[in-house]
Length: 246
Length: 261
Image 1 (cartoon, each protein chain N blue to C red):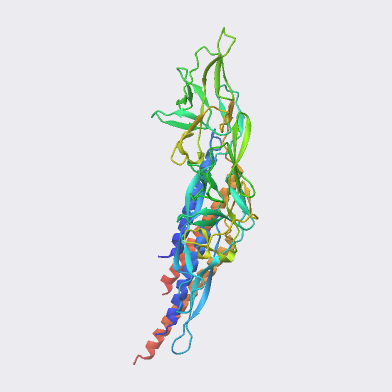
Image 2 (spheres, each protein chain N blue to C red):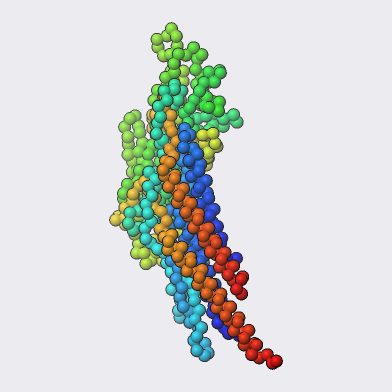
């Protein structure tokens, strides 16, 4: 039997994986701070006895699209967006430092500054604690200050500074926890050049048109692979008919 | 069976939740003291199909692996406690809070609930109650012969009575505040209750510390921005359509296999 059937089958399987990939980007079209994943296929020639005619394909998550999403204004002082490149440092669920561009922050009952998913935001020395205050403001360099009122006079206290980093994007990858990490578990240094804007959130950077076109392309490619399987089946049928003795 | 189907399904679920939140906001556009909600999404964990950096042979390793995302989920519907605009009603027992804080209401089950809705009335026995008839805490009893009620910005309630030129102080309104007001649980009926996430109530006099002042004769309107909600609604609808398109595409792919092999 011709091994072409298996090559076509692996192609169809990889197309289905790439489609899953695409569906994930589309499902996250309105997730704040989401960065689209880029999929790529690679040819994997198989060398053995005889001619290397079998070339299988392999889908990979090649990387992440770090382009910026559009800024949506919310007017809430604890919603921050990063202007330009950079990330907010948070404490991941495993306790290690991780990075995100999700800037919807809130204060817990114990006063800890967290993202709305419940990850503590890192300051220059560990998580930031915010005392009870009339207002909380975050300035462009990430400084968190509280405004309290005592007998008519407003008092401003600086309670910490959000750690903002700007590592080389070549070393940044998206982990299984959907947060960004540095390769080899390194920790990025705080970068004073990263600035934030309070009162808005960064939308998802998924490009709807691109994803839709990708989806159509993958669906058609998949059909082509199935067609090849059909051809392989027909070839086999013809071959076995040749051997029939009438 | 096919991942794209289930991933797109999570997208549909999330957009449906978001639309529920938007509809609730729009329905409460005229509810006094209402705070709008916002659905917060998070991408789900990634599955490792092929480990990046794994050995592809003894000497070589895979330069990049394949990790598949598994979709999206709604992690929270966050209440946004921004100030709503103040409306003048000139009604003596209408109160608005300018700044932080909540009125305390005694529920029939004995627990205290919190509200920003300052539409108060007087019950038959002279108690200040909300529109459901629940008492404002601390209790304020308005004498039957009171000509007018004055509520100061610091919460002092005084009444003027016939034959007495000096107004008599009959009580003080106290407000409650929370470290994390978004953590309060909505009970319906404009009431909120304390949770572990909101922290314990901090009670104090209006216009001191972090508490806002009480403004008599005004009501705080809903902080829903209709234009913003409508734009969100359009976005939600299109995102929903796109995800259902992904489902039908995945369906067609499988159908093609079934029909042709």
